[in-house]
Amino acid sequence: MIKAEYLKKSVIAALWMVFLTFPIAVIKVNTIENTINWRWVNALFAGAAGFLFSYIWNYFQDKKNSPKNKSASSDRFVLLGNAAQTKSVKNAFYISVAVLAAVVPFAGPYQTTIFTTAMLYIILGLGLNIAVGMAGLLHLGYAAFYAVGAYTYALLHIHLGIGFWLALPIGGLVAAIFGIILGLPVLRLKGDYLAIVTLGFGEIVRIVLENWNEFSKGPSGISEIPGPWFFGMKLNSYQHIMYIYYVALILTILVIIFTNRLQSSRIGRALMAMREDEIASEAMGIDITKTKLTAFAFSAAIAGVAGVLFAAKTTFINPQSFTFMESAIILSIVVLGGMGSITGVIIAALVLILLPEYLRELGNYRMIIFGASMVLMMLFRPQGLISNVRKIYKI
Image (cartoon, rainbow, N blue to C red; front, side, top):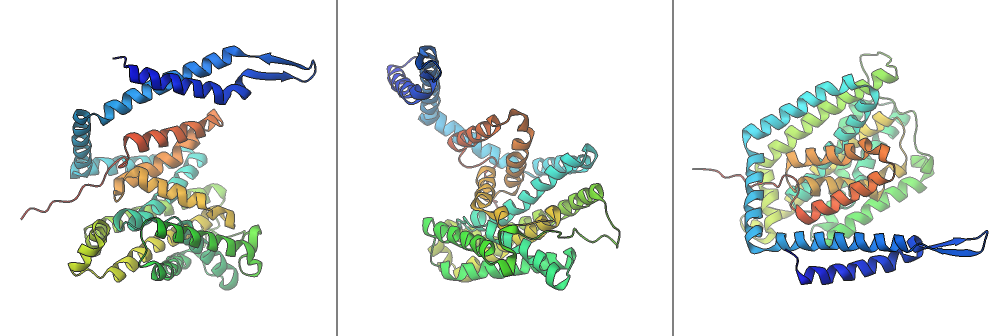
């Protein structure tokens, strides 16, 4: 149905579109002949596109906000969330992922490498999901713990000759200590204030690594980091890619099992209770200080393990590998997947990491498609792909 309100808003949007694109789309200066070409057809196209987009946008927004559709949509999302939590659907999903993981090594080194990267982000997403999704602690400096793990392995190898397998738990432990160090001063902070402090922590770690040349070799980074040891065999490039893939696969499975068990454990329930209402959970006997520090430590330890794996995969690290963009991507994985949802985080990591790779042939347009899909997702599905549904225990 055509509504006068839609037409009015769309006409205004079309005029704005023409005004904003006028200098670029309409005016073309010929510097050789000193003339100006007025391309009025482009203005017409810009106005028509603005009008059409605005009309469709208003129509769907109105439809989405109507009470009838709002209720039906809410019920549909709850049903979708419940269906995603059922055992049969979960098993089918994990079997599909297992089949995909078994097939990938036969698709060549390129596919194997990008899937290894995707698994790395699954590990990071699940780690951040403990702090943000389960405990409700907004964290914008998660890449700092990722950097701590990677640099721990690189420095231990340079100075003490320690290999990957020993550095793996040490990297997680050192990152967990950093998590507790960060957690102690921010115990009373939450929301935006916590986000600002964690963002600052992430930047401090990156700047220290960039400027402390004697310690971290500064912007030049550390190279020739060895991969995982494999019974003394010297692996060529192809074998190294395949071996790292299987190591990443095993670590991903272990992290999935750990986070799944954590959700059902006493600590996990305390984290979720704290997320819902800090005062009420404290009144019920939950130690908030201990619970927050546990969330920071677990979350950071998983990032540290991912950092060690990243250093072994790339064999080279520098501070530019751990910028705020890394933290933003990992947080996007958690938000897109659904706060607290393990299945959602896995799907979101695969989508966010694999989609830009497979759209690479579209050049710069792939990032526009990527950004537009994220905006649409947040507008029409703000609770994430698979929203976490509370477990119901029947007595």
